[in-house]
Image (cartoon, rainbow, N blue to C red; front, side):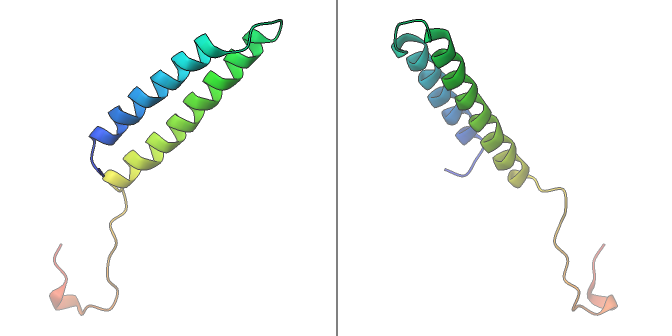
Length: 75
């Protein structure tokens, strides 16, 4: 499943987890703190994973071999 759809599947899972955190947070005076903490941590973890995953799909730096002679290097 290492393709572009993984990001959308992960987003769907994170949205479901955020909705669960919203509705299932314990009632009381700290309910807002629970909701905020859970939702912010879910979104932060997702963003870190998505940025890392997408950076690996199309890397900026291409590996180059240094042991080739000049006549065999194609530019």
